[in-house]
Amino acid sequence: MTNRTTGTKFASPSKKELLETYRQLYKTHPHDLLLLETQLPVGLRPESRDKYRIIIAMILSDRTWDYTLLMSLGKLFDECPNINSFKDLRSWNDAKDLLKKYGFQVDGPGELNVDRVWYLITSYFGKWNQTISPENIETLNTKCGYGPQSIRTLNTYVLGRPDFLPLNAEAFEVLETR
Image (cartoon, rainbow, N blue to C red; front, top):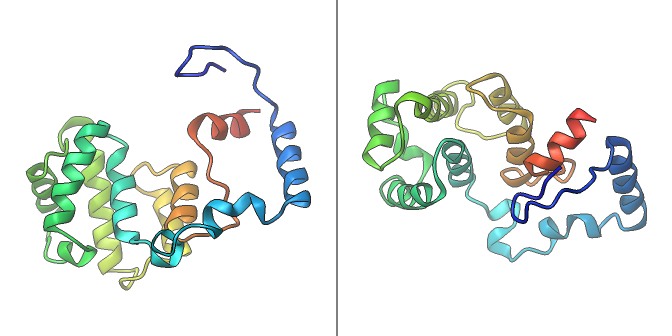
């Protein structure tokens, strides 16, 4: 494996080694592993988080450059401050036009952004009964290219589930492939 920043190559631990290290740390310091979740300021704790903004940011970050994401999300959230702002969208093309208005890529590979947002909107106002639950998050796994890491991250950061350990792409890849 290579460090993206420095270009330095280093040996990757095996899946067994990573899991054993985690188990040992958990046995020794069970509460210290979740400091990120348990010692956050009140406004950032799971119960205070804006699930809508986290999910929309995650959906749209996959196919958007960071600078564009920052600028476009700011405009989108100013005009659409909550998920109810999408309630009047009636079609996939309405969702596409809305995202395009705020500077998101919506053609070619960017159509996946539209697919994901449209699935979220139709599910939230339809079969999810305007609730974001662990079961609802899991349904994203089968739609619109959400992978296991996205689902894991949504469960961790949207729902604050301590039984999920969020991993970056490199760490997740090590666990899956070794």
